[in-house]
Amino acid sequence: MSLSTWWIFVTATFLISAAPGPNMLLIMNQSVRFGLRASIYSMAGCMTALMIMFTLSALGLGVILQQSPAVFDALRWLGALYLAYLGYKVWTAPVESTSTSASTNDVKNDSNLDNKNAGYSPFNLYKTGFFTAGSNPKALLFAAAFLPQFIQASLPQAPQLLILLATFSVLEILWYFIYALGGLSMAQQLRKPNVLRWFNRVTGGAFIGFAGLMAVMKR
Image (cartoon, rainbow, N blue to C red):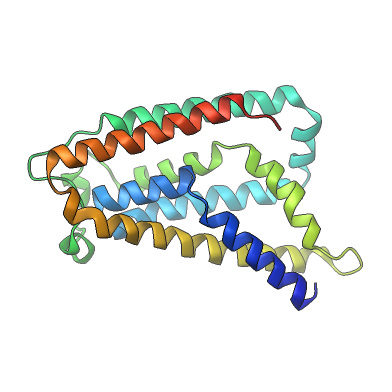
């Protein structure tokens, strides 16, 4: 892989990762509600799911989904149902009078986070991130169609794939932190329970909207 090819991949991936989607919305919402450090567990869950999906795509599962509409549709509907469920959970998330929003102190001290925030634990945050990222089978098709364009067939493919995945991971995580910090910057304005309640409804509604888009999307 030439340096120029790699830079094209960096530019394309940077712009693609910047687009707001379920992963970014989840991380921003959880940064607002639970703090920056807590949102890192969701980031880890999202990245784990994406790396698994991209690896499966490299092993040929993306091609199988392209050739098996029934399998793709089943996964698509399961993903849509999960995003709709997640939207409902965010929409109806309890808002205490003291607010569960993040503040500067939340970043410094998250030791009581699990007891303060509706039973959320690092595992639950990780699991939510994992299933949110893994709920979209189109990521497999994206990897199957996008990554091979930057791999030179005359050179060993495994090292090239590792470079691309490592580059994607760095850029994706960069945007995760940008969205998380953006959410954290809004936390002070969202400390009022009625404002936070509306924020949860907007983000929950967005998840339900993503579920609707997934339900009608084509391969």
